[in-house]
Length: 224
Image (cartoon, rainbow, N blue to C red):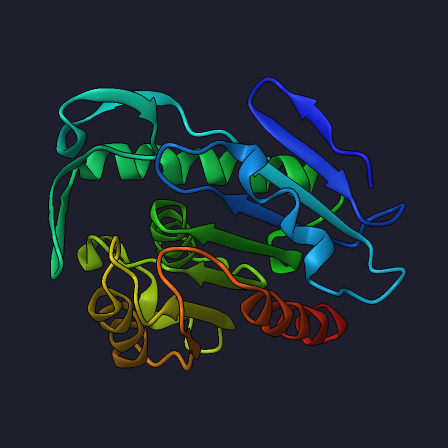
């Protein structure tokens, strides 16, 4: 797999003529390259035809980091172990970016029903929000070490009880507390979803057992 580096994103295909797409959103301060190496660690079966898209968040000042300019999907106004205060306008702007990527894949022959939205930390918050605001369901959501910052924005939550969700969190996460991850899981369950919830003995990161579990989940989803 040879990634294609574009101004606003990185793309790679695991095989020719992809039948599904995976849009993966990075965390605060990173960029689209952060999770490109992960695809090889998923252990997907040979011949899996998946287009992987890794967009770069825009550069913006982040209030909780003293206004330092970095790649961020939205501004974080303040944070604590139990909550985040964020700029909802920025979050919705990033959801619109995801919608544009979904529309582009539809033009290339992959409809929303065959697109998985994935994200780590802040990127996972966007993946949750984008998926659960749109009336038309995506294929699934991958939410790693993340949270739901604004449940009131999940305007189509009740319509997506059958949406497959893989949610994972580190038991020792010092950046996004496990309590925030569990609160997101509980929010989904209150809306009728049944997320696959996994925890691992790690901090704010990913680990190989997590990636293998995710690979198994994705394999089953793509075969379905």
